[in-house]
Length: 373
Image 1 (cartoon, one colour):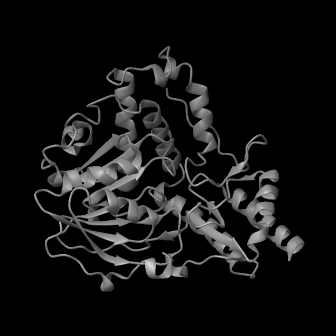
Image 2 (cartoon, one colour):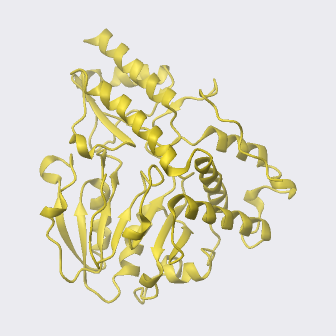
Image 3 (cartoon, helix red, strand yellow):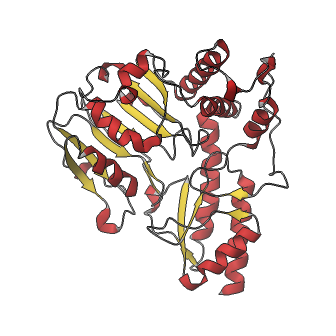
């Protein structure tokens, strides 16, 4: 019988920090402990998952279970393919136009920050990019309302980044693009809340935020969009070929798939996405509530578009930044430095960050404010 995930921890083990890094990010302790238990000898197979043939019956079962659990979490219809691929989301900035242009010359992109810009830059190598709207006018601190979008009549698809990790801006609504497929980079908030997959033609997400370790990307794509990749698309980026080969046209990132599967089970045991969303709402409310309660710290994002996963904030006196980071690290509150492109601070509070971590951060924020005001 397969061993269950270890009993949930209500506080972190004494040897572990609270890791607020944006990715690779903190993972559930229960998942890590089960992987540790199984590391040398998986289910009496006499070998580690890292040593298994990806075509052997053991790993084929691991991959199939991971897919089944992901389908259960997101209620993914049979008309969608689930792919476990490589390259992270960045590689798929190119793979998306390669696979989804389907003879068209143009694609629509919404510009909401650094990751949207990177996706657009790659797409321009393959097609004309029409920017339907941009929030750059206010330093990427909001999501443009759909009523303001200027879409193309002949676009192959509409692309959005539904959570900007750097700017801390998140979609809390789903665009309606009619018959034009909606494509979403959900890397930094996938599985943090329920999602109606049927409203999207394709969803892709790097694993290193809410799914598992770096090196894996999950692609969820509607079957009718497959089969018309550009002629010079590399086989490993051709979604149809990968779907036909059960994501094993080449050797997949086996250990990352295994850990993703354990994470999916961890989520299912906690009430699925509806359950984890309640926790994420509470964590974000606690942190934003404190930030908004005084003027020593501030968050620039329009309240209705604030990310529950990535919370950027600045100190009133930027000369205190280095001291803040040093003292935070000493308290076991790690990787709070903001992205180099925007500065300041950033707390990433993904699914695996417990409420205790957010509470410890807020306690430190108040102590630091009191001592340095």
